[in-house]
Image (tube, rainbow, N blue to C red; front, side, top):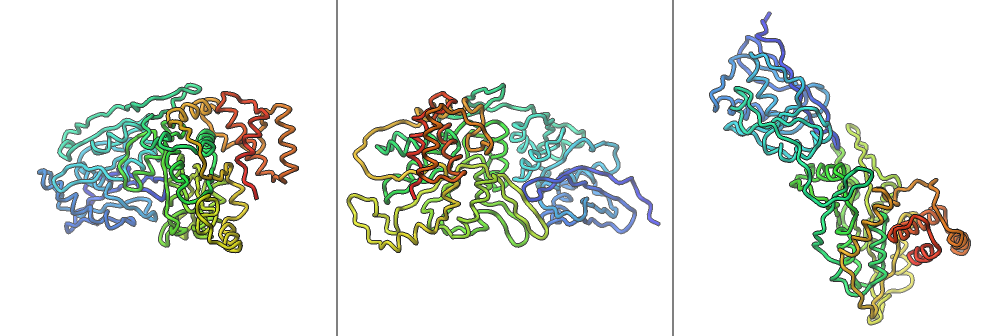
Length: 491
């Protein structure tokens, strides 16, 4: 029987399993036999290639590569694993195979260059954020990002040679350098860098008012109007007046950016996704034949999802949008994987009043028949309309009023503080609204005269409360209800 040189070494690493991370134990065994190096445990091609990177990194830095049979096992063996960040734990298991060093309290992640340099990967930040271990050993490049995550001891290395005497750079947690407001002791960060400003929009006073209420309450919004009237112009500016973000929200957004391969920035700027109407159902909601991948509705979480030319989106895309708007989550199931992710975003949409786009124009003649217009609008079902709290029909007028994004954002901050860092869009159906008697009478008349469904009534009250909040009130007055009724869709 072959005699083991040393008891099996164990180092903790991790892999992304869909949206979340799972711990992986890197076990190593060294036995007297013909020299060999193998990795088992459902490792991807990038992990199998680790053998060459690890061997080169060790030999190029005058470390010995034991002439033994080396077996690396990634446990649990039935979990698919991928990512070049397994290079470092595999290298350390070989480097420390005849030394006494306890790695049990560390999560070890990092890619190796052939010269021994440690490199960051897109998966390291989302893995650490998902698991939130007490201690991590990572490349110095990764540490700069991880320092924003509170409660983690970060031990950073630039080169494999630094492990000879275990000389890490301990990185302290750093705070965000942005303006913030405090609500119940919790910080909410924001920036006043309005790249697109509402001051560029001349007129359309009511449309801008609708955008303000959408941002203040995180309410869904739909603009209908002729081509060129300013629908997209207003919605593109809406992103920059959205409410402040907590550190947890910023990290959650950056996790998604990292998973998409983008550079993390830690800006308190909510995401904005605007897929083309030709996008497939899988691209919008996630999916895939081999494994469940996240889609646009997940990347829009905590921000905005904008559908321009709404009726041109595929029918099944529009119908499947109802569930994430209602439940604020989506579950993607496949034979070998399941992913559940949050979909808490503002759904913003724009559409023409007819196929040619000229129905509401005072200058151009509409070329569409009544049947064509009806078919065009019927692509959007009533249940989907019912999940949009704010509707406004935009027409060209002589209004020349202007308002800046800074002025609008100040009102959003007022409403955000009134809502104590929460959003009216997420109120539960059993929420007890604070209404004046006159406001209650108006609601009862509206229900009767407009045949409002329970959801439509609830949407009306959420919008009314948001309007009151922008005026630094929690009590809903008659004028709040009347203003909210202006933004109700007429059937």
